Amino acid sequence: MRIKKPSLIFFLSVCFLFGCHSIGYADTLWSKLKSGDHFVLIRHALAPGYSDPANFDVEDCKTQRNLSDEGRQQAKSIGRLFHSNRINTAILLSSQWCRCLETSRLFNLGKVAELPALNSFFENPDRELIQTKALLEWVRSAPLKKPTVLVSHQVNIVALTEVSPESGEIIFVRRLVDGSLSVIGSIQTLE
Image 1 (spheres, rainbow, N blue to C red):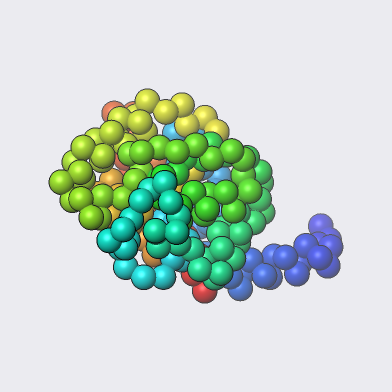
Image 2: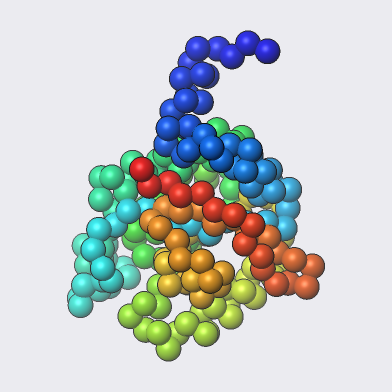
């Protein structure tokens, strides 16, 4: 089979960004996501800083820590990664924080719905058990027949999976028959 030159250039670009050493591994992860009973958790793209300002208001992006230009480019690259793996639409659910919503929208995979269980509890650790339980209940009842993408925060992903992701890291998760979850792999997207 002959590879067209633009396709080869795209392939090499993907290799450079995401590491060719894990191509077979990545292919397996993407195949699993398309097979049902799997989903991905993604920590929002790069948003410099730590926590949110004291005047944080979930309804006002100006009061929040937001994506940098590099974070916006990272989110677009993540979207291209989905498209290059023949996932052109997905069920997209996001935290209500602006950095998560913007990350989700920049994937260009379809309409984004807000899921409050994905909201950060970093500033309110007493919410961890309640939100993690609500998120686990959502996952247990979700159809997961189409590729499903959940965009959230580091603390939420750690609470659900015990994996501490980098900004923009894609965590692939399998829902087992008994409703428990198993992390099957991850792909980092920071250069």
